[in-house]
Image 1 (cartoon, rainbow, N blue to C red):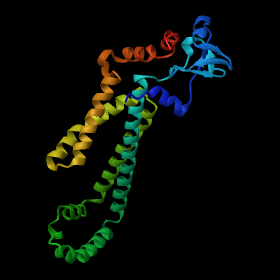
Image 2: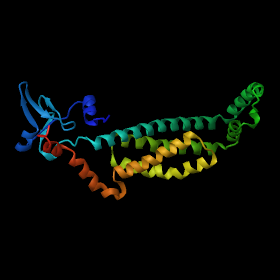
Image 3: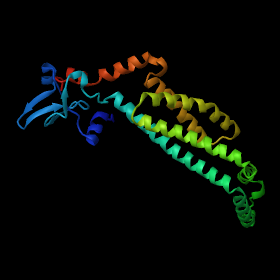
Image 4: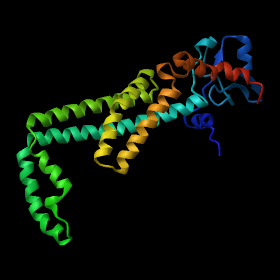
Length: 253
């Protein structure tokens, strides 16, 4: 079943109508009914009763995303949501590291106390906590210097800031955000590959695949770095599916 993204968007956000000053174009976007004048929606192409939402020269008409452009916008917003969620979790991780750096000794004592309590319980299930990779990693973290932990917290906050800035820019389909996302995501790909060589998990594999697909999709679909004609071809594609295209097909339906 093919999804009509144009009508779906209009159902959620309402129709977008516009009355151009040019008489010929104006008449092609307007029709008379028994209930009054109706104007053609710039997104879905259907006629809707009532006065137009805006008017003016045709070249000042709102550039309403529709068709492939609208689908791409929805995908960008999915990536924006994913980046925002990731940014929030990284902020929480940075806060945890910062708090840990200021109470390292007390956390170590509390951890050792709980370890003594749970050691017999896990031994009953034939699991040796003293040789657990997770426990070993936690114990090693207690040996980190305060300055090292502060640096880690600052770096995590910087990474979270990049993720949140990407999220905001992608949500509003800003071209600078698309460039930032491609560059920042591609820069971390070698690190993600290295982590897989250390330890393989489905979460790491899924994250790596998602990031590779995001880089390829944004770079190609948005024609970044001169790909597929670059910015000029991208703008031409957007405008070819806007007001003038709707007017050209106004007599078809």
